[in-house]
Length: 290
Image 1 (cartoon, helix red, strand yellow):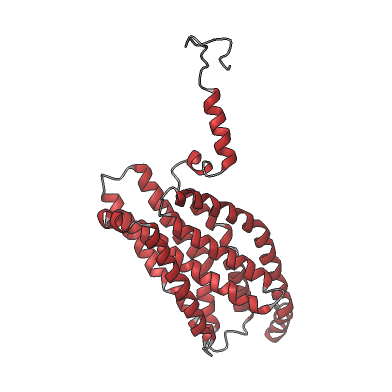
Image 2 (tube, rainbow, N blue to C red):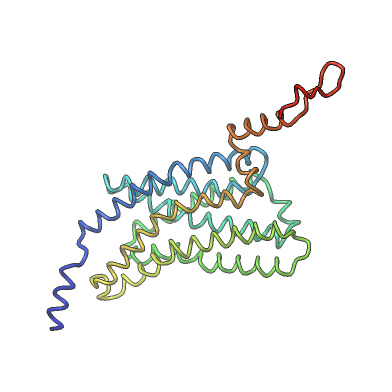
């Protein structure tokens, strides 16, 4: 009876074609949904960089890595070498999460030091270093016969960093009296979202990828299902990353101010709220908008 059960179970195991079909469908749906939202968020953050705000630099690079992921993942269903771009974007996005969390932590833990290093040029240099380091790591892993195991390590190393930065920031802000409640909520919200994105979308894939390399685990049906599920989850992470744009701003008006159409609407509204005066300087009630 046990043998019959095993045969039946093996018959419903996902084969290579069905796995490819699931991942292809998810990659193209994610591309259609997430790509426009990501470009809108990049534009909004770029507007604030022009206003000499440093913080959005790392978030913009994170969103650019999402674009690389989205395009590489979808196009790899047509031509397999594109998968390297998808993996490159994944690895870069994890380390830009670390950059965002580190920048938030330094801002509250070492405010004087943060003001001295808070320059756009420095942020761009750090971002360039992340891109180059990711590319070098990709070249090293591509030439390794045991890349199935070692490719999980660059994704696993940020986990203790992100956790430590969140807990350290939470401890400092809980004891600080000089930080306003709004600022405290903004910083902790950003760090919590970064950690949550990592744990939800990346950590399951890392754990399963480490399990797969164990002897006799790759062919187990349960492991194959879990591996497919973790790949689907990881391909969905660009959908949530644009939410970080919200945490970079103070309120909804500040978010919408980046877009010309909303600025024109706000300007017209302010003008309509301003009373009109006649040539004598006296407010004319007939010309005052209702």
